[in-house]
Image (cartoon, rainbow, N blue to C red; front, side, top):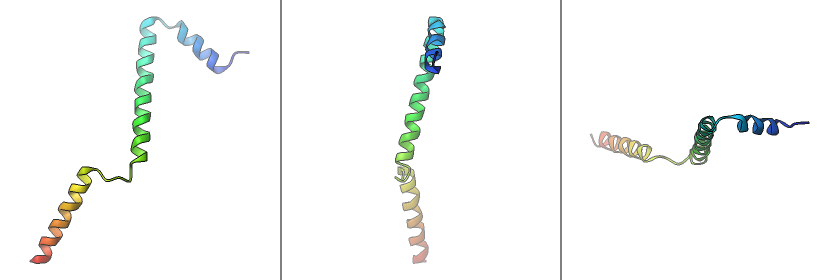
Length: 68
């Protein structure tokens, strides 16, 4: 009885070298994308530099408005 993994391995082995290269590149892109998503999720609460700039700018505007 063949497992799903065994069938996948058989299919990959049947690909020609160019198809194997394309598959490898696609899987590497997917792995990088997944890693980026994981990192973004982990640090989602950390403000970005543009967030900090916008917040500080808004505070400056509010301070100037109070002075008037």
